[in-house]
Image 1 (cartoon, protein in one colour):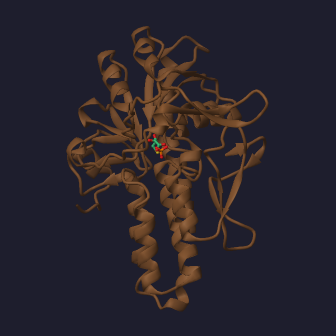
Image 2 (image 1 turned 180 degrees about the vertical axis):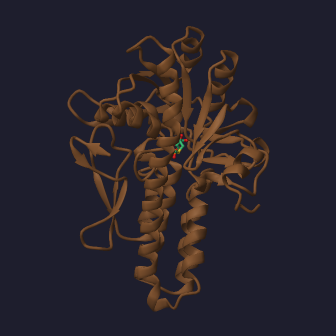
Image 3 (image 1 turned 90 degrees about the vertical axis):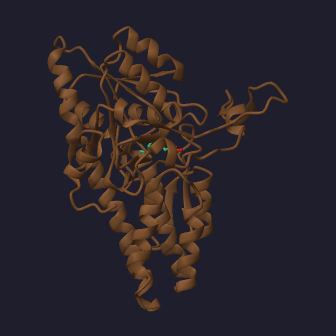
Length: 365
Ligand code: MRU
């Protein structure tokens, strides 16, 4: 996707052929700061501190982190160390484990001398595959938006509500939930996106709004608590969100607050769709509420807000009474029964084991 006319992916190998470039998402939307990662430790830090975030993207970046570790030391011990360290950075998004498992499976039987080139090639394959997968998710989600547009008066926008950031910044390119929106906008379907601000980290306000704005997609940022009201007043035609892990039964872990949107959507008869690549499906897990580990992040993310001052400085201020503690569960699980359907790179399906196995008959687990 483009920023001010220049094409970007969210992770790429530098011109030097080995170091890894990322966009520091903690600086967006105020600054476009491109970071250079040169070792696995810096890569783990980038994932943990959310300089990169979004389930598919952290998988791809972690894969490059393995390549960086092997460049320094191509031994099996180094491979195992890097996989363990990177795997501990964030617990909820399954794409991280998926990408690291894939890297380890590809590399551990190779002679050390062949590992570095193979690691970079595998990381690139993961990144390229994610971009193409997300493009296809867009193709399979697009008919949903076309159909709604066809039922509305000519020119009336399809109102989509989304939560968090599941756009190109959360993936390698195109995005998951935002991919159908970009494709609809590009082919002239009138569209308007309600962007949940997504406290506490504000991925909606800072990242989704930034992306949509750069692409010219009409959108409005709303406080997280506004969604139910908008739905009651027929201001939302469809909800589309991304996900960090989908169980084989179709339960959906996503950014905290998603479950409340699904409840409101159900109460108001509004379709609630979830967009995901194959790498987000956890075939080992059935019951999402009971089994998916939910990341608990620092309370400071709730007590403090970061923004840009009038004179251009990025500053963090406390907005909670001194002494009041804060809890910060980063994700919640929406049970499959509240999900209208899943949009994948292979097509759409029910949020159920039968639905998922219909699209992925080769899956084991
Ligand atoms: O904590 P984050 O920002 O890494 O959370 C991930 C997300 O961006 C969302 O939960 C998203 O909707 C799924 S990732 C495409």
